[in-house]
Structure formats: structure tokens, C-alpha cells
Image (tube, rainbow, N blue to C red; front, top):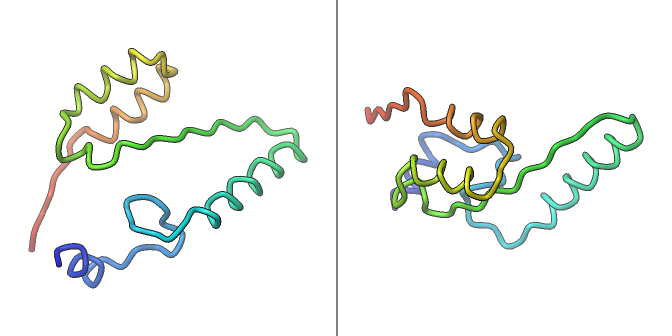
Length: 94
């Protein structure tokens, strides 16, 4: 019910691929293939990160997630990007 109400109030971009229920991932897979092919064709560097922390945002502390990234040897730049998403977070319900 909450998700349906939020979707009405804040419609998702059609390209939103994460945090939603979907029948499959074929569209995202095709998009990823296209991005990789374009980077190769244009000799451009490309970094790809896959993160699956389903339900982690409401069950696991941010510090624990960041510690896990460090333990796994994730590039410090990527870990900082994730860390930055946790700074000055505010939730407003109107």
C-alpha cells in the first residue's frame, strides 16, 4: 500500500531499474551491453558497479555497509561515493 501511494505521489522515471519489482532484467542487461559496446567502440574508460543490498537501508547500519565495502577491497573512490549518499540525509513527509 505504501509503495503504491508513493508511486502516485512520486512517479518513477521509466529508466529506474533498482528498488522496484520487475519480471526480469533483460532490458537492463541490454542497456548495459549497449553502454559497454559504446565505450569499447569509442575507446573510453568505463567502470561498472553492481550492488545488491536489498532491504539493507532499513535493516543494516550505514557504517556496517561501508565497513563491508572496505573489507571486500572495494576501490576507496567507490566507497566514498557510497558514503557520500549517506551524508545529510533527511526525510520529509508532507
